[in-house]
Length: 114
Image (cartoon, rainbow, N blue to C red; front, top):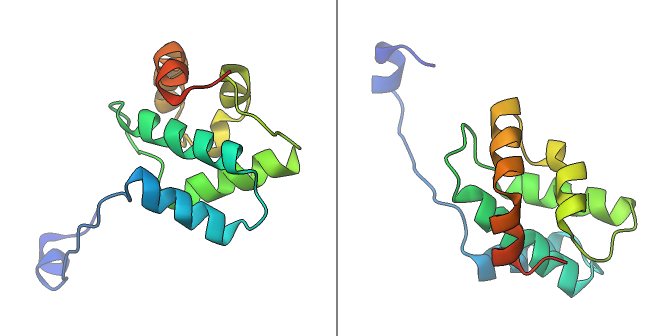
């Protein structure tokens, strides 16, 4: 939170999240060698999660952190269970994690998860 005086002296830029195609290209360029299927599932899942009324929606840096974690865990395919097990990589608030948990069936179905 910034004071009104400070806000008046700032330029505010609003940059929306990248679309699915662009975010997938970002993941593939930042994480060369990542399995295309996994990258696609992660990006699709992130976009589904962003549709929820979260306190803080995951940004592209969280997408990249999540992919890095999944690669480190030697995950080749995303599933509902893996999403729930690694939710702390993309949700920074407990209320956001709980909301994703409640909606995991829809997220999985719309993302084509196993």
